[in-house]
Image (tube, rainbow, N blue to C red; front, side):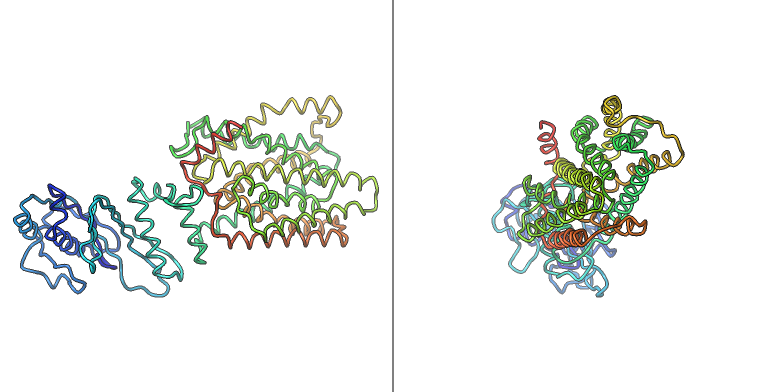
Length: 534
């Protein structure tokens, strides 16, 4: 095999002794070299041994050999001659040829043909100058990398993936990507390792990355819009934060319709419906607490202040993520956490120094609820990431649909208790504005949470929560536009601290060398079991 052409041959003999002879090794090299020229197209081709290819001329193995430099022997003649020399039968059973174009322009992707052979024999290499290897198990991997990557680095990566495919049974590339990487960190998958390698070499998978970024930006816009219309709802006197949370959570229920009508089932690599239901049951409380807290906070503080404080979820994600080994600890990140806490305090002081003393006292309650939402949200996404790992391991519509049903069935008694205690009396909407706002909030929750959780599992919890910091400029701009922004020097400085901490954390996350939060498929069951037992 050379860099441009290669082949994978299955030559069988009757004993290990024959497999160690120079005659057999020479035959393997010549046959592999000859058959590799049978593919002109770009890629792999399985050669039909019964189609007469053994009658083709033998091309002696040499870097300079071409189809024009054939010998007087056919491939079958070479096999027959070797049988006569070693005294045992030899059969060519299978052959896969590969053609990797050698020439490439600066704009074309870098490709490498990785090989790995597992052998139980000593001296399995043909000779010191030959790339051909003998063994019982072998793999060829065609790896393509877009960008200005180093060819040697790509070659090493392709060999690593070839070694993986030899060691772990797989039938498709998709199965290979979902396997745990041999020698990886924290049960890292092959796909996660490839993403990490791409980032370390300053390359970018434009499709995946742009999709994730676009989703997070869209989610930030939707959430700020939801905060603003919720604030408007409270202004017109319909202050029902728990009812709003209850209805928004119930909006997930329609996700179950395809499963009920068409009996849709998750694929075999995902958590089954029973496991997904149990997981949803564990996470519903954190989801309700996070969303109720942020909705309730809007009664007592501005959208900008509430958004700034609730957006500290990225920092709580970092702190708690380090404790549960989902995030890596860095000193720079610790400084960013401290800066964000200082910023949060300054935002709270901005509310304290307002004009209306009664409003100030309630503003502290609003700020506290926003912080509670941030912590609850961090716990929610960290535990979900630890339990699930990759988005391919869970059926998201089924998971969210279960959350909707659990919320609808289990939390209506709280509405009754709040009504009879006078904390939040139930009131049927008496005008179209209230109905429209409630409906819009349900629609936003239905779509935005699905997009956000998918984006989070494509990256890490910290990256996803950092991305939601985009809510800050959007909400401040929105409050300013509506004439509701009254930030003093305290608030402005606090906003700068919080935003600065997010920028630092985002930069550090790009520089990190490993992603401990990315887990393989076999760890999903263990993590699911540990959370289910908690």
